[in-house]
Length: 491
Image (cartoon, rainbow, N blue to C red; front, side, top):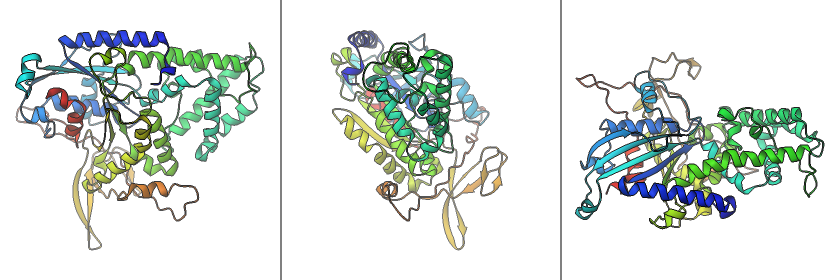
């Protein structure tokens, strides 16, 4: 994060937190893994499946330490941060495995520690390493990450950018009521609590409409307006952008001055503590992306997802860490951007999904630079809810995926009851992802977007062993993700 976004006091507190973490890490080596993504990208499912596969000997051929038999034990342990809610792994895995329903989405920050006992592949390392690595998994909403750029913007810049964006494309329709109210409001008038509440309510409604499944837009700060938690109704969340008055300091007691003060309070009370206490202490990061949903919602959703990912990745401090440099400013030295729900496509399209996702983050990677940072992109399914098959139709053999659609899911005019399996032709992504983006350029004609079926399937039914123990959750490339994110720390 650029120095202008943190004060000297913030930097001192961050350095102190890092010193405590690193000192503790000398006795108990630890890596802090951040897991984020925008709503419904699969954060909770990713963490639950990762932990379940480690604890239950899942099939992880590309996770070298497990595949070679060097991991001797895996266990959950109490997390180090007592003030942070625990990630309720047991509840989530029960929903996935026993009830076959998808667990609730991430709505606040949570944490879980899993510890691996292992034997180093290097005889030299075995002399000096305790052969133990704790992974502190920090789960937080991607909407909170989109708030970090606000630390570098004053209320005027925030208002101007938000109002300009609200007038573009489909947002113009969704923001009509809020914009009309805002444009008829005199920012220099005396502060009025009821007007502030009405504006904040209308602004929140606009953001929620943008986020809805029908639109699936992504760039929607402030994030707590969508996930307020215990701040709901507080003054720090009772503000909205205003039409900026002429340059100069706002008159004391004006509506502008009230909104400006609350915007700054939002940054101080909400955004800065998250940055200092959690984000600035991360070592590795995975960003989960539901690119298929955006493709199905059309050009604006894809463009907005690209904008959001650029903003998200620009928040990271990439670079290589040394012990001494990390005491003052820890850097995230590996970032994985994972396109989720690969099981919704035939495996022949997985490389296309990966290429599309790589194209989505190209601009962000160029902005933050590669200085010592490892950035990887891959297509995964944390839980594989389908299997592949083929069907013959009109003399042609078509690749399909087979799964159990969720209750009340409708496909081709047929509504399912949550118990009957069906085969779905998933569609194809273009071989060249640039074609997809060129089709979104202003003035593009004869645009034919790829038809990709996004069907909500139930989690798979797992077979039991003779002892009645459930087998590990099936996945696609979860082992490859593990190897990239922390496999090097088990070498």
